Image (cartoon, rainbow, N blue to C red; front, top):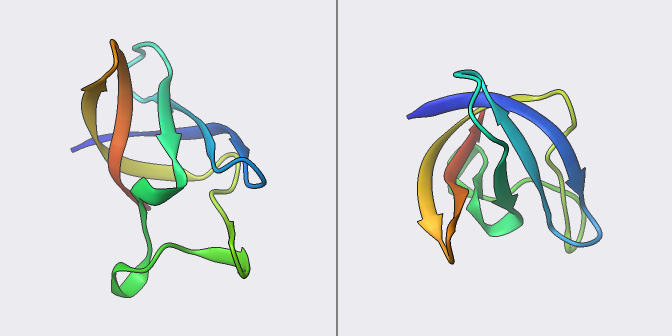
Length: 76
């Protein structure tokens, strides 16, 4: 698993970016890849997913449509 810091997240759109700790290029993260406690996706309100900017996360990098995306994202 890789680790990084959430640099942007648009809860109304359900996506953002993570800057990897290893210094590589930013990784895109989608709301449905975020795993909260108990396997649930965290929400601020019904249908509004939360991934706080500045939050340290772990994730599994994967290739999707020619870009790196984060899967299995967990808050640290």
